[in-house]
Image 1 (cartoon, rainbow, N blue to C red):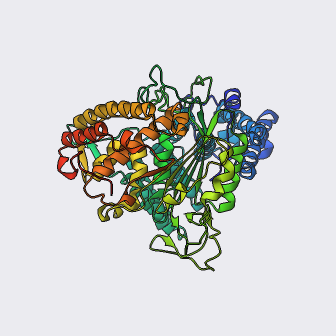
Image 2: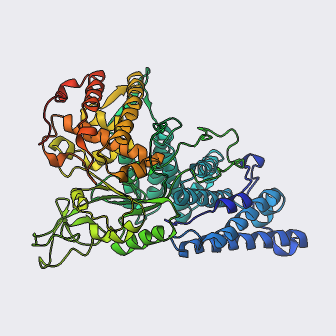
Length: 594
């Protein structure tokens, strides 16, 4: 994947005013003899070729730009967008008269330019988290399909052109997944499957297995959610889990909380055998959306396919900037971590989310320091046995391909919020706050009941709670479907529960001030509330019998005020009764401290 930014300022200045409705390409005839071409038309073809070559050169050069940092890419990207704007307008103005007849411009070439612009917007979304640009990428990809720009590719005996079409489909599917357009995803997957079958039958290629793997990955990704919501017609209803207006409890008058803002997030996925598509594991996909607002102007359809109206940008960034790191090496992870730390604005928070296989120490030493508890795996070619890494070194040596708790110590000089979803998450409760800055670690259970372990390929239960608590609650209760009316009733009830949890956190006399410092940010507030709800639910569930099956945190939360509050236990049991699964939970008065 190509990773780069598009600055909001540049995007306004270099906005592509693209109207796919504006023209229909005429007959694609070959170029005439050069001697017969008038001078003006020859200049038009020459100018078009220059813009086309220049756009390809600049686009390919984006791969060489630094993948991190906020400034190194801006001027280069501005030039790239400039050229694509000129190229698109140029082919619109001259296509029928000159380019179709003299240059032999094909519809797939128009589609290729549009696809490149769609990629620019998509990667801008990845780097800035501004979801309105994800929607603009969707508009381009949607228009390409509606206008059948790649239709004639199948009539040409050129496998490389068919591959362009297949890659377009894969990119379009990724965008639709991120926009939760699951119905359209299923249609696109069916079309892609037919295209792959035609491709492999027509050409004796070596990449057939790779494309079949793409199909398998996206099919597993779509089916990863453990519960479906059904309407009255028994049709599946897809809901968005981005932060919506009114979706987080508001700060009440008199609440004393910090003024910190979540500015940067590193989302790291390195779980073995977890469902993934492209370079997103299902855990990364879920936490990614938990850190984004639902765009107010996000339309399900566009009235004019491919026509992008300039959108007003908010005065401040709506969502934290994110880096998505799929199976990074330690060097890559540390480089991105350092870049985020360096550029973190004042009064801002850096969030690190780790969804990774656990690395365990071989033995205990007399002195147990921040490198003696293991950590989570970073990418390497080492063998993995039963999901855990095998140690092949002297006991006195530390694991090299591992992010140890001590590796994060230098970054605690600024406010740091860590989420660890791993079989060795508890290694990160051995933190020391050396610099007095706000620091919180939310840690997943390390052991799940057997029935839950079987579902691990479809994503972690802990991350599912942070992404959509109701979905996770239903999953842990063994429910696979729910009526839309009951879903909405349960969601409404949970909003009340969240409000009560918020009051528990802010009114507790025993709570560590770090939690209150982070509570002022809406994203972190919701994560903290969902974490408390998750912990309370699992403590009452009869299948979760070990203390290792409960989430933990650093610093520890005051249990009686939060996760073991009698009021919260009452709420959990009320929700269970509403869903007719009350028998799966202990009575709230029982001692659940194992």
